[in-house]
Length: 191
Length: 357
Image 1 (cartoon, rainbow over the protein chains, first blue to last red):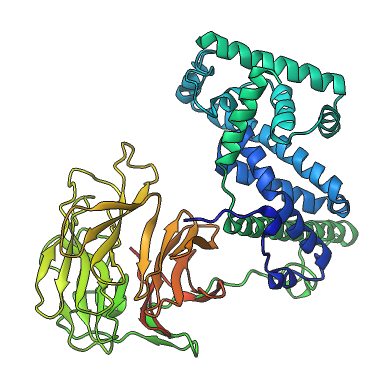
Image 2 (image 1 turned 180 degrees about the horizontal axis):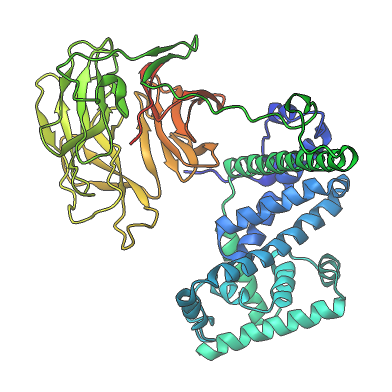
């Protein structure tokens, strides 16, 4: 029933942008946010869904990234910097969301116990189901999953990944290699 | 590329390919970000004011040794919060063209039962020609329902004696039928849906719902535009009665039959004489048309009682104690009053309920 649209072709309502032209915010900021939304919202949402596995949580993470960008107004003036800022903010928020989930579960020992009963086999690819390797990817160490997300979701080069995550290119290669190795091992356990 | 890389790339593509982002999604997210920014700005201002006041108070105390501030001399300090809007004591007609509020008339003794009367009900539904108005109280073991003319004349009780309660519901667009829910008020069961022929006064049970299920029982039935189908909400059975209910929309022939699932994770259907219909999905009010489904409103809290105007151009709904009216063509939504729900008497007049369940 819904119609998917290309993010580059979204008809944003001009009047809506105009209505936000108040002195406190200034017209440029609202308009730039509109543009950034058009260009990057869908891609960022997909990144967050891969990282979090939940569309609702992903929407929250992406929206918070835009709110943070609004606070850091100067980043908006350079579209490239803004894009990098948003990607980095989504990755950071994905990390804190996972942490928050764990914290919220703490007072519920039964649920926590059940969660912790999850063995290595549980997080392996039990069936050759399309998309299931992404579930396993989420269980990797933080740096490994972030590097894999940059390389295979955002399709960044090693150098671009290093720049975004502010780590060395050698670390990117090492985390990529190690992350893929763990994924391979998890698959092999089930064979 | 190694096989594991290929597989990961394939799986990522499968996951991201399933993330459909519509124009409406982008719009909603953009609005949500604006709301968050505004909310944080307001919070920041409030904190700033409070900090200023605290600093000023400290300075006054230290410099002047004054322990008490003159209440009339608080010039730049925070102003007292405005009192909350006064809730009218009885239901009222609201003329949307002029903003005039006119209390509903008291009813004749024949339909007034104790404190429950036409002007003190919780739910209203007006016939398409505005000639009759259904009302019911909610949500006690003994609830009352009636029907009357808008001027309060020719009132009649509709519910049987005892804890057998009737809840609307509404009329078909041609005014020949009225659908309502009838249930035993002593439990939390659904009861069943009935359709009343307004000419003969005869009612027909049109569902045979599972009466072993207890929980969120309100079915909110409404007719489709052609009057041939009744669309209603129904909560899924759940083991934890305290957990929030998951509600789906169902449809059943207006002449009776087996209900079929109409729309998952949706509630409170609203129809009109057009083919379009609205429904609630969480805190969103959505509209289904021949061109697809789109979000009309995303609220910060639950939306309830969406009601489409007879011509299908507007939707009245309740959110956070306010009654709002949304113009579908523009997407603009304005607060028009305070109340519990609003029903359309005609395309420019609402009956606003102020009762509490």
